Every structure is written in structure tokens, then in C-alpha cells.
Image 1: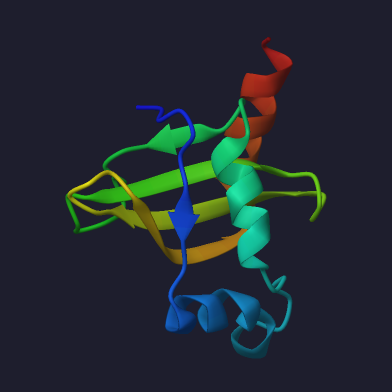
Image 2 (image 1 turned 180 degrees about the horizontal axis):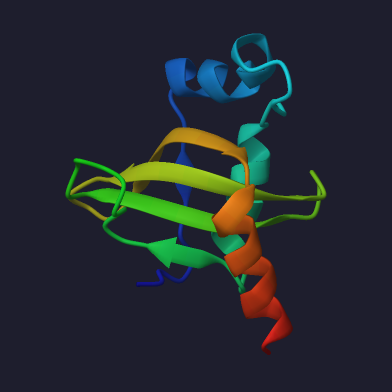
Length: 108
């Protein structure tokens, strides 16, 4: 499912969570919420809705590229009843998610 003009918002706790990933995971990249906006608007993004790894039926997992960060990022969000996205977590994509994103871009 793709929503044109999609927006993502982050509350203070979620913003702090993604901006301080390296404090919890030493090799992790801290993520700026502005980068997740780029991911959501990436025309080549991958979207799982609902997110198969979440217990929430309104969950969304988006894998896309942030030109500012120069990396592929995985964003997990919850969709509200009005269609808006509320960020829950985000991290630099690795493993299968990164491979799938890169392979899908090469197939075009």
C-alpha cells in the first residue's frame, strides 16, 4: 500500500529513541527524524503493511533511502485511524531488508 504525500510524525520519546541508538547499540547509527521523511517519500521504498514482525495490526514497516543520511533506513510506524503515520523506531537497514531494497532497485 502506498500513500501519496504520506507524512510521518515523531513524538519526543520516539525522537529521543532513534537519535540515541548508538548509546544502546555501540555500532548503530543515530537516526535523525528528518531522514525518515526522506525514506517515506523514496519512490523505490519497500512497504509492509501491516508489518509482519509486529503484533499491531496498524503497523507499517518502510525500507527506503535517505539521501541526506546516505543510507538505507528501516522505519517502523503505527498508522492512526485517519491514515497518519506515527514513528515508533528506525535504524540503518542491514541483512535481508537491505538486500531486498538493493535488489529491487537493480531490477528496474
